[in-house]
Amino acid sequence: MSESTSGTISGENLLFLTDEQLRKGIEAMFFAYRGFTADPDRILEEHGYGRAHHRALHFINRTHGTTVNSLLAVLGVTKQSLNRVLRTLIEDGLVESRVGRTDRRERNLYLTEAGRELERALSEAQRERMRAAYRAAGPQAVAGFRQVLEAMMDDEIRRQYHGLKDRRK
Amino acid sequence: MSESTSGTISGENLLFLTDEQLRKGIEAMFFAYRGFTADPDRILEEHGYGRAHHRALHFINRTHGTTVNSLLAVLGVTKQSLNRVLRTLIEDGLVESRVGRTDRRERNLYLTEAGRELERALSEAQRERMRAAYRAAGPQAVAGFRQVLEAMMDDEIRRQYHGLKDRRK
DNA sequence: CTTGGAATGTCAACAAGGCTGACATAAAAT
DNA sequence: ATTTTATGTCAGCCTTGTTGACATTCCAAG
Image 1 (cartoon, each protein chain N blue to C red):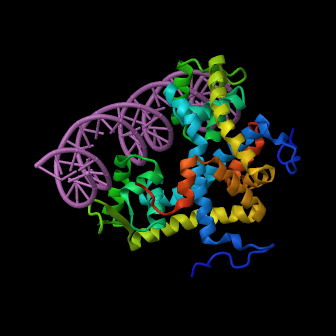
Image 2 (cartoon, chains in turn yellow, brown, red, blue):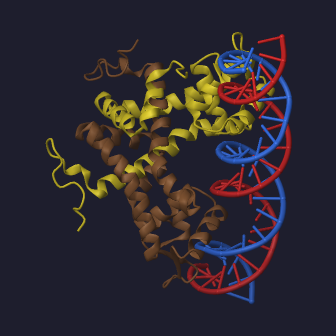
Image 3 (tube, rainbow over the protein chains, first blue to last red):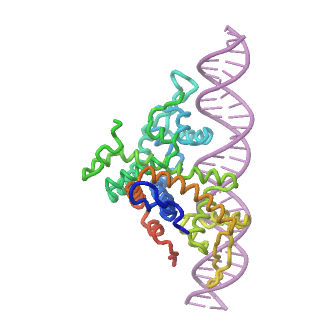
């Protein structure tokens, strides 16, 4: 038993696809993701926010003036759930919601100065961790890291990841 | 833009640590983690379980006979939170809790046949996704992937990741 | 023009699964 | 005998998911 999986895949030495190797990869994802979110989580806690707020701030910052709907598509949650987070961010003056010019049903979302400031603190903490990991692992490892992550995404999500532009309808 | 990704990643030129590159890495982590959990989530939903149950099953399966305490350390949650999950798994006959032989305060945790079956279904779904990603990216990329993930963990967690053996006390 | 449907966003209520605190029990350690 | 440790449980809170109901706005068919 235990040599079940890979046998002989294709290219060169492909003995790396044993169940045990895959299990290690799975646990690495789990533990690494904990590290990945640890630093922002600490900052968020000071402000009484959670990861949902971080995600909203991140994507509003990435795409200024994005609508609630396109944010929903990126975040993969229901609009009601997002709405609660957005409401607190707006009340707290971190996000501004302007009625759409062409379609007044839409709300265009922007970070205020305070919002940019918090977003910057959060992303800087996260970037710092990633920068350190990148440095430790080296450029070639980083390229591989990105390749595997990308291959792990759902197809639809991968498009979003590349797309940047809103492309609904 | 658009030649962003790998451009000239290889050698010693460390121009790959721009904020923009790091931001792409951050988003890649976010989206990839979603893919990573998507397949097990679907299976769990059918059984009325959540990710917390999956994590418990995984680590009990990894270390047969582990105690509640060491499980807490690995999972990084409170005992009350873990207990709730554990209780349902025991009630549903997926996990067996035996009083410790040497220290009878401890409970040693084991998967039952039904528990192993569900764990197998969950991990197989997850392995399948990872196997596909590994194949698509190739052995060298996988090595880099693992290096970066490991560098991203908290120090203490990294020890757990390597350790496998319980080493509390 | 009017009207009905679709799109967009908000409010209300509920559930899962984190958390803390308090407390009980059994067993080990001192 | 007393204290410490490991575990379990109850109560209550918070964040962040969910669905349902509803208001507003746009648009297209009549």
